[in-house]
Length: 170
Image 1 (tube, helix red, strand yellow):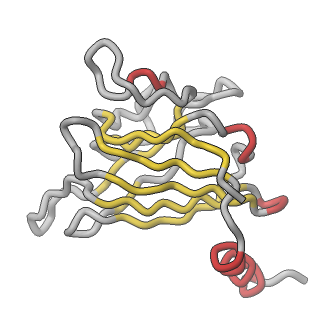
Image 2 (cartoon, rainbow, N blue to C red; image 1 turned 90 degrees about the horizontal axis):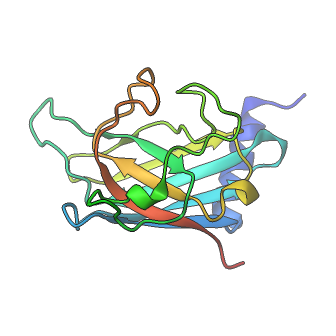
């Protein structure tokens, strides 16, 4: 019988000893130049993909109850250039190969939770895509958290950072 402890040890082994198969190096838009970081994608066997995010420079509200949540999605194109005057609009819409309603897009990820200094780290196991499917697409960080309700993209607000997903050097 496979235990919860064994599964945790498996994920720890992935993070400690394996190199990611893909990565996105996110950079902030002109309005948010301090944002930077990387999103790493590790295959986790038949369980899916382990997505590890490490981002700094997020624009947090430092009030006691200030906003520190940011939406994060995989978008259909790897083009992080502005288009029509909007930051990162070249990335297109959410990656959604099965044409699902939001929040069941393959690209819908949990929000980033930043600390008071604008740093966020997260790890999530996702089985909605494989690493090979997302190479060449992009990761977008939004100014607001995804509400997981509003169609088609969760009302997550402005695109404040973007990175193209590339095959990692192995």
